[in-house]
Image (tube, rainbow, N blue to C red):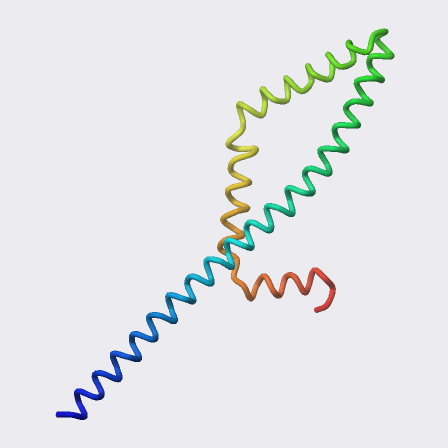
Length: 129
């Protein structure tokens, strides 16, 4: 009878340790995924800011060029502003298809990507593999 009680107690301890280790593993996996998503978004944001700066100066140059062609600088800025107004209206009507769905798919793909697949893709992208 004592050995059965000892075996049950040992089994209980092993089950408890197993549950604690699995809980810790889930927590670490969630932290890994969150860090992966945040770092990916931050890297893309840095690139977007750089492209936006280039885009801004190109637009200022285009506005000044059009203003020179039209006779007054503010006419060039009005033309470029009108183009952005049209683009904004088009984006507003198609925002789910153009903006929301691709970003949602990117985040979901990043969250569902397995760690081994990400390690293999990183090394193959670096040309190490």
